Image 1 (cartoon, one colour):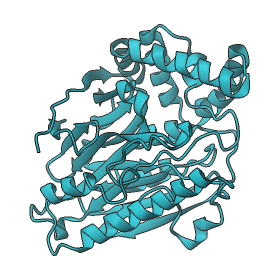
Image 2 (image 1 turned 90 degrees about the vertical axis):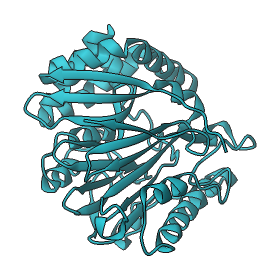
Image 3 (image 1 turned 180 degrees about the vertical axis):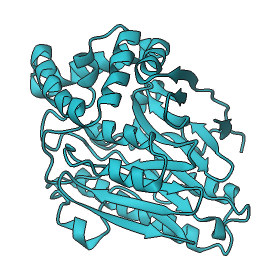
Length: 361
């Protein structure tokens, strides 16, 4: 089939944490303003929360970052200045204003060791599932921070980081999970941003589990030496899944016995049950597909990320028009990091209908 060619915005930035943030914010000013305005509208409609109150709560969350990850705060200050916004306004995008507010959109991650690939390369793939309207906010950031590894990252507005890699040979992925111990603390999106500054797997594992975190994604980290970890986390606990010489898959539910007790109860709602079953099905489907091949290749990984079994709740996710609005999500972007070659293959939109483009550090 003929696939369309889409080109996403590429943002180039370098320098100190503040300068890096300023350059990103300047180039993403339109996206930042739209995202903040959408957040203002959402808080008013969902919780009848006025903007001044939202900023006060953001200020409280921000204090945890100032204590634990001050360099990240400098980057955010630069971003806000570049985008022409107040720091607290930008920070509202990261705060949880009601327990259980963050929904499980989707996201499927897989990592394959060099031992199993025809190219003898380590590949790390991520399908980013979100609301269709958020696709407009996606951009690729090529960053060269001072005293930290250069990086390539898929982001929303240059602000909320998703899959990518850095010059230290590390790759990063993430899956939303629903822990039951969420608290006020360092927002999970700022935790994930810090991973890009890691120079070793040990540093990345440490950053993922900072003690004052609000909650946690399932963070996936791997390196060019073949170390592959999935970090199932919550606000107060975590468990590591390690694979060497094999492959790893993760979606949006806990799989370790230790962390299953932190899984929030599934609401008494048919669509919430469907959402949970979708995560289990995507996990099993990706695992089965990887297990079918004696040798895996980049084209085969791409075909997995385009898989439509269980459509529209498939690995390549599409909007279910019959679902409640909060469950109408799709794959808005897909990325495959080649940790051996230090390249990032990116597909903007559903991977079934668009081509992957190659980007380098």
